Amino acid sequence: MIKLVYLIPLLPLIGFVIIGLFGKTFSKGLIGIIGCGSILGAFALSLGIFFELIGQTEKSITIDLFSWITAGKLSIPFSFLIDPLSSLFLLIITGVGFLIHLYSTGYMSHDEGFYRFFAYLNLFIFFMLLLVLGSNYLIMFVGWEGVGLCSYLLIGFWFKNTAYNNAAKKAFIMNRIGDLGFLLGIILIYVTFGSISYHDVFMQAKNFSTGNPVLTAITLLLFVGAMGKSAQLPLYTWLPDAMAGPTPVSALIHAATMVTAGIYMIARSNILYTLAPFSMEVVAVVGVCTALFAATIGLAQNDIKKVLAYSTVSQLGYMFLALGVGAYTGAVFHVMTHAFFKALLFLGAGSVIHAMGGEQDIRSMGGLKKYLPITHLTFLLGTLAIVGFPGFSGFFSKDEILAHAYEHNKVLWFLGILTAAMTTFYMFRLYFLTFKGDFRGTHDQEHHLHESPKSMTIPLIVLAILSVIGGFIGIPKVLGGTHFLDHFLKPVFEDSSFRMVHHLSEGTELMLMAVAISVMGISLYYAFTTYVKNKTLPAPESEELKPIHKLVYKKYWIDEIYSTVITKPLNFISEGLYKVIDNELIDAIVNGIGSLIKWKSSKIRLIQNGNIGFYIFVMVISIVLILFTRLI
Image (cartoon, rainbow, N blue to C red; front, side, top):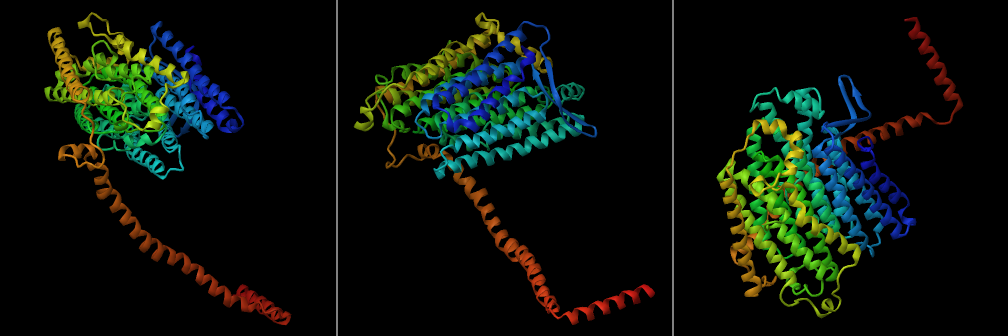
């Protein structure tokens, strides 16, 4: 089965080619079968490889496909690496990706760009699979750039809307900023190690001393790439704007694929980061600051998708916090659980938007529980999972991150707990305002409220089940579990684990769980009291907000600050260079050369007067001059 790994990215690529070339002539049913079937086939193969990997002693297998780049001493094969980390990500990408594809067959059924949408989705999955399967940094970079391109195509899918096009351009450009850092990091890796193959780089890195400045530079450059792709401060503003795309795109980008690429890259490069403690501190601090910052913004947003978008930024911050404190398994664990409950929440939001006729403002919702029973129940389960309710998937992964943060630095742990409290409040604020109370929309909206079709509700049910039981793969020993995921990923993080030994007593772990549960309970009670018991509603657009509320509602005016400090000065400089350098200098030179040639031509052409006698005279004089010069 492992030898067939090349089929996993190939199937979505074939689906993209078929739908892209012939989709216009196909029925929507056939397009859905091809689009979903290619991802389902990739998932089946990924599942087979996962179980085969569990059953064998060799946990890291490189499959060479062909020689790719050879130039002097540089030799880069096109090869795939199969190990526990890549196999787990294959399952997440193809599994959740298939459910999103299936959901899209219902959600996008009335869209005129149906075939184009599925072509883009398949291409997106292809590049993401390439990113996690590559055995070297260059193949990872190809997949990295590919998902950036596809995100541009999907976010701006409804390209007739200028605002959506601007959001797509914003995502593309901000990702390019981070990608430059990633590319420089890859170049420095080659200069330092003479190779960009994971195996060669990591084997040589073990011989470097802890804190080596070259490793610190490499890891910081790689982290710049991760900041862009995984939306960390200060390169996070593209992700909330990415809500311009169709809701399945939001689920795909924010849950299982693109935004987790930065987490995967650092987890894959774990030994480099372990040997660069300064870089790990930077990762942890940026992660926890991003988590807290985004959570505060989520408290005041009224767009159902914007709340979930800032929640994604915050949860990604949690994952980077885990990476920064050396909890590599915890970070990957949270990637997995987050893929389940965040995909569920986004698709649930899409079901609500579908029922509301495109309305996304939670101030116009309320009381949807009785109209959308399946969406309501699954959304509630997803909410319980993300806030870390005991027994749900998010509880186990978030607890593991907070435990390692507590051991590493108490301040990081406190900020993590504070973020968790905010997460509980804004998620239940979203849930209560959407599904509880009285309906606040128009009579026409209420008349058309209905549950989504099975093509949309079945993925919700499956993701809800995974959100409930997904955490059982990582039950800690203190609760009587064996933490299967920790054992499964041990070969990948073995060298880092050897250098970073964690010591927490069972009593401390139980105390930390109790604190987390208590904080979650208090926050939940406060949200219930505010929005259910007291029936408090968000302020309408016309009402003047209190200063602090306005600050977070306006997202700290970060976009406006970027526009004033960066965008406008660059536009001013560009305009000046265009007028002075381009128009006055370059155009003057180019036009001047053309004018000079034209003037000379106009003079020389006078020689061509049509007089044969004159031509014979010139010819004789020319012969005489040639002979004269030869004699000299």
